[in-house]
Length: 217
Picture (spheres, rainbow, N blue to C red):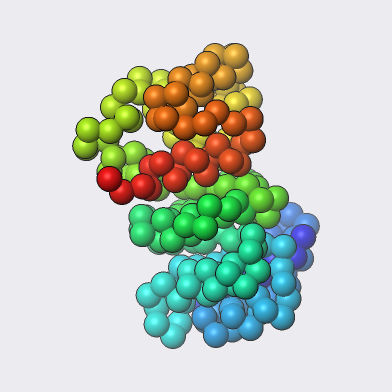
């Protein structure tokens, strides 16, 4: 699986290269700036791009904008963005086209090798990998108003957060130490209360949930 990596901090970039190579990823390019990322994505057409949100020369959202441009030119290009802090606007921009193959992780997650590599693989396969803290903030932002989320039980909110991370019913059941049948029931209740169409497609249901959480009212 071929990866283009963009990170301006040398030690972190070098560490990510070594980590990904150790898990059988091929590093097509490892760059440190927005212009280099634009060229690398156009030239190498990777299976997945792992991109720091903030890159030179602007150190604002250069990396994210490069990734979004690449996705417009190559719809469905899998992109996992890394950020130092939760930026809800960046999450909304990344999810705006409604297609899968997207992820948003805080850089702290990079130090959990298993979690990070799993996120890269999930995104490369067309799935979604959202940082739990992003999900928590989206939930908190909406729960402060009169929203359908207020109708969810504490357990349903827990299941919703895990669902929005891209986890299947089986994975959620294992995490919460309950039966998969119980999770299926919770999932059906969540979709019913949020007014969303029930889907057996894991990625489609994740995107539906995230779209609902991101939607302004």
